[in-house]
Length: 96
Image 1 (cartoon, one colour):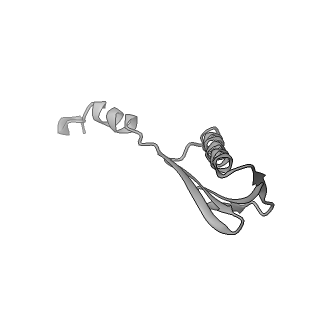
Image 2 (cartoon, helix red, strand yellow):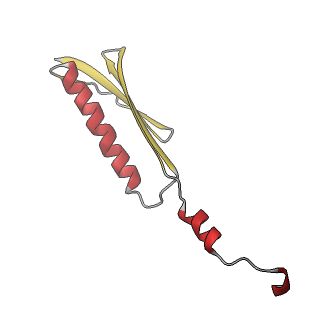
Image 3 (spheres, helix red, strand yellow):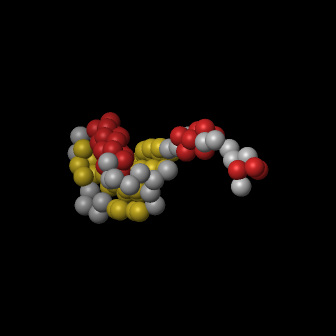
């Protein structure tokens, strides 16, 4: 079994897993990193207040050596506000 350390960054907030996890092989460690990033991204989106961007980065180290990096980002561009502003009737000079 090989020991892997995970360093997680959620929207700039970094957490390091100081207790190494053991996996049978590197594919299992990779799968765990991807599944963890999906779960964290989902939790960020369910957090209520929805910012315009989300980012989750997981860096995995085999023992002390860099092994892989999983990065997920989501950007939300709200177009409805722009659409609503265009649909509002424009005031004419004589209305003032």
